[in-house]
Structure formats: structure tokens, C-alpha cells
Length: 207
Image (cartoon, rainbow, N blue to C red):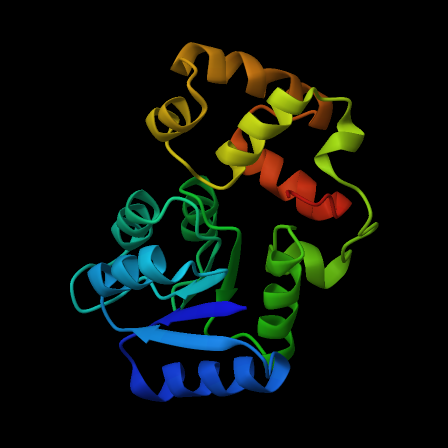
């Protein structure tokens, strides 16, 4: 298990790494204090999970997440940020984060986020605190989707841009939308952020 901590604050970064080593003693933990270094490490080391701060030496705010997502499109991301406003959380989910944990959160919350995302689910603090993951055995395949629809929807949930999905799967961007539509309809939602929240409520595994 390879985990990347991206944070330019030494004390918080050290504390997060210590927590990871305690919870996942067999994991290999990497560290970066800039977005560019994080992208390089993620691409060369096949990172399984990245904890990403939004304010770094070379970028700040949601642009940090967008830049990292474009540079490392397959790496699952949990944003760990001092900014906790709802619109920031929703923006992080929209641009590809699989989870969001405020820096004021507890150690248990960080542990839950780690376990949730590594198990293929999406971690949203308020939802998981009150309702938890209802059924850890549920998967996208339980939603009545074809294998292709699952493949495309999974890529969308991971925040991959349509042009990247188009290139990786060899389909047009209009076809992507056609494959995603049944998944949104099955969940009773209209966009990706609502889908993420619904999946977290139901405890549906993404991959």
C-alpha cells in the first residue's frame, strides 16, 4: 500500500504520516510539499491514496486539486483542508476528490476517511458521521448498469476529465454522457456531486 501526503505544514504533515503508519503499519508513505512534486511521485510510484492539502508552495485553493487531478488522473484523493465551507467541499467532490476531511477533524475521522476510500467508497464527513456506510457489499454492478456504463461512471466519479476518459476508453465525449445518464437516473440525481453524496449515503463501492 502506497500513500502520499501532500502538505507544506511540517507539524500537520508529520502528524498525518504518524497516524497512517499507526493504522496501516505495512504501508509505504511518501511526502510532498508542492503540487508538481506530488504529481511526479504519484505517477512514478503508483500511489494508492493521496491526502492533499489545498494550500501548497506552488498553488492554492481548488486549483491545487484540479492541477493534481489532471497530472495524476488515476490516484484516489482525500482533501485535507483548513477551509471547511460547504461550497469548497462540493467543489472538491466535483473536481475529483473521493473524500474531504477538515483539518479540525478528529483522528477517528481521518481513519474513517482512509478506510472508506481504500475500500472503494466515497467519504463525506457529515453523511458518514450520521448514517455511516449502510452496506459495504453494494457495488455499482448492483445498480443495473452495463459493464461499460459502470466503467465510464467510475471514471467520472474519480474526477477524470471527459477528454481523458474519451482517450482512455476510446469513446467520444457525447458517448460518455450517454453512459453516465442511466447511472444518475438510477441514483435519482442530476449531477456528479449529488451522485457522490448518494453513493456515500448508501455505502456503494465505486471500484
